[in-house]
Length: 253
Image (cartoon, rainbow, N blue to C red; front, side):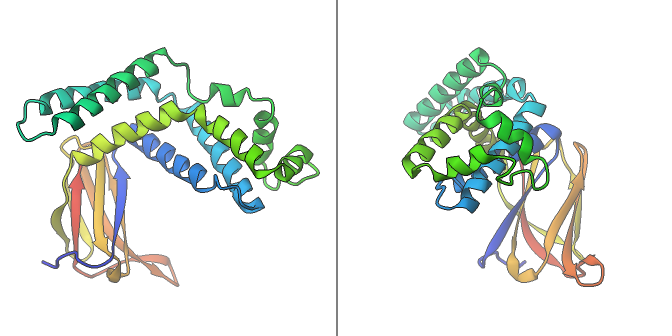
């Protein structure tokens, strides 16, 4: 079987709605931070677009109860690992302290994004950002003015807005790290670009494969069974199934 020593791509696919929402929130936080430089108008527009999408996802999905349960589950796993002689006591202690802190703050906290939903500046902007072309300056003169403020002022306001979401970002990162580390990459092979197996109550699949194959994976499945089909771009149909034998690595988490 081919060793994955060349440039590879890791593709992740959630197997339940909870992890699907976690990954969406993580992705939107990455987008928010990526645009946080606010160096030009495009970055500023991208920052608000990602921030409002994040607020929308958190408003529609009350993930706080799930995060409380998952952080508690992580703490239980850490306690079990503490009995292993080769685990770093200092690292374990830090992670246990973090899990206890996150649980406490999640239990005391309100629904995520409530403060930002009620923000007097963000509120009117948010309504217009979901309308095609709704961010034109004749609709949002306050946004055009905000773009002219000095960079330090804009950075300070943007950081203050993100700070209201720091708890959910930390909790999502903590839980997803545990989920990902539950599974280790193992070699697998897709005959004619197809592979299937049982899920055994997994929550996340991670596929790592060489870019040189010129294809990408699509995954369908549920909590009982999943299938991976490698596809390639096609000028006539948009995409088509590859007939190659694909050597890849799979982590079931």
